[in-house]
Image 1 (cartoon, rainbow, N blue to C red):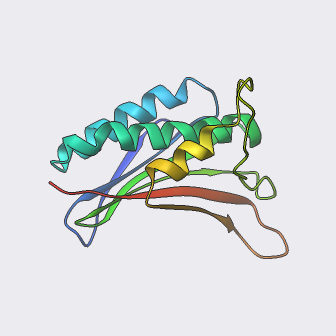
Image 2 (image 1 turned 45 degrees about the vertical axis):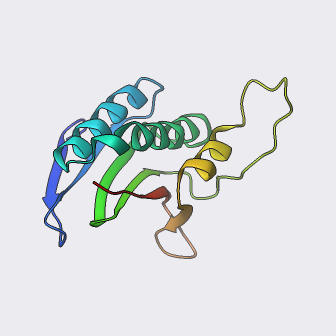
Length: 145
């Protein structure tokens, strides 16, 4: 059911969150809110805005470059000192690419920002090699209490 947030316990004892939302710019606001709630629930208030911004930039990329009516948003804590955010879309051949926009460009800085804020980030094509159905673009940051 689109819009329903799934919460699942992880090995770290912290819940992981994922939700399917429409692929629209307005979805970024909901995702930022979810990121803030998740990090506050984990006692990581000091990292909440960074996680929200990372997720927002990944969503902006999916809205602009992906296809299909929806995207899946993932917020997880795979280890005590790491937070993972990701966006899954249905455009496996639209792999994100860091650009060097000119000073007058109005877009193209999102992945530069992701690269600056995240400890690491990447993209995974999903599905069979011959017929992939989508991709997951993710970012991971180191956190401390």
